[in-house]
Length: 338
Image (cartoon, rainbow, N blue to C red; front, side, top):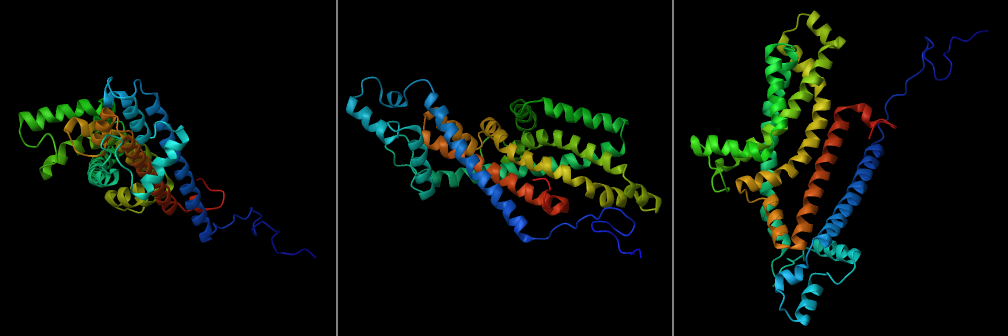
């Protein structure tokens, strides 16, 4: 007698049974632990790499500091104080140890300036500039990308994408000087250097944000074009929903996943762009401090600045990955993409 029960691994109509996504919380914990382990290795690798580069810089930093007529005993003492008489792995170990203990000092005589208080002073300025730049990028790119997708092939689309190509092509240092000439010198609306006034952040944030919005607007347009062709959007329009509701609730909401991914990558990349922009606008942030430390050959300060940049970049990528997993349940399934 034939049984009506479906075979193992099949539904009643004979289709293969799809396993439901696992809700095991350990999957999320293991995912975070793997990311944290990778971040620790990346931070260690960045510290080791910058130490190698510092040792390859032409010229002896001790001779530069003390001059050619320095006594041999003074040269040896300074070299020992800067850890230059130790192998490279020991230099990295001493740096990481003192950095973690909060006892890291400047590599420049008289070795009394502590690094961490200085980092606590300049790093928030760079983070504030990065946040303002991302706000400018989102405010410009989302409307521009959505309008371009809705008017694909039209005059608005061509104009918007032309501006996006221009924004990608113009380097940040050139865009910064153009904004300084226009809004700072010619019109006199905004301060052009320093952080003495609240409006001082406007021009640096615009310089970084407009460059970021160029790529983000193109990604938004491409994601919206893909979503607007999907069946659920066509069905929403067939039900007579308003175009605004269709675009915002049904199209843009589903297009946010690729936009979120690119935005997360840009959030990390904005830190590297901040180095150039801070120098152009004399913004007293981490990038300006890094350049000054390189010019002075303050090895510990350079290592510390690079390590903070690396840790911030890794933290942003980790948060972006977790946000993507929260937005897309498929990523949380066993065997899903990392």
